Image 1 (cartoon, rainbow, N blue to C red):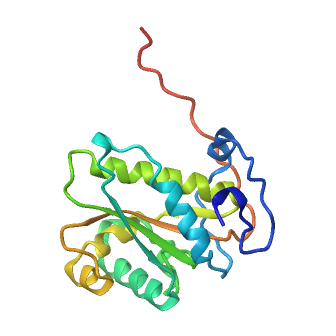
Image 2 (image 1 turned 30 degrees about the vertical axis):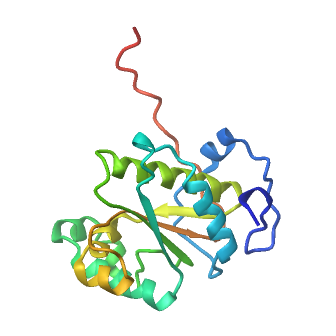
Image 3 (image 1 turned 60 degrees about the horizontal axis):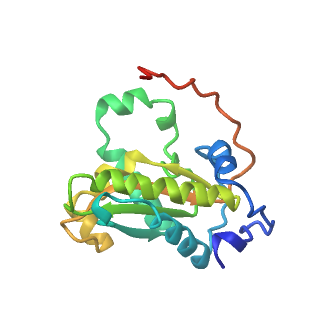
Length: 198
């Protein structure tokens, strides 16, 4: 099953003729999920969309880790919270009032996009792949959210060993994917700031 002909885990068919612009305007960072996990087949179709992204010098530097084990996701969340800098913890104090707070919002899947030291723009390439993945997920009714708080812990040697990640790779984009619990309202965006038009 590809993203062009998918049915979400909730059983609802989605309008797979959604235009690119429609997906861009509909996509939102989702922070509340139902317990269902996207199927392996659907995740693979999202990864296939991700690698259609452009990359500098056509290096295609990305590599992916997919985590759907709830216990492992909880362990990563707890480790990331423990590693967090005090000033950031203070800024996010409202979230940390509950010891059960999960940085992944209980989403069923975490996809981590890695790259090695391939060219100057490997990190940018990973973000381009992430955007493709997020738009493809939106087009089939799934929610996504980048969880930057996870990057630091995923790049520590102990967690690289635990996840089987080669030492020379860096986690650039930790991205959750899942079935949204309800609708995420649109957030107004600023108009483009045009510095010059010559």
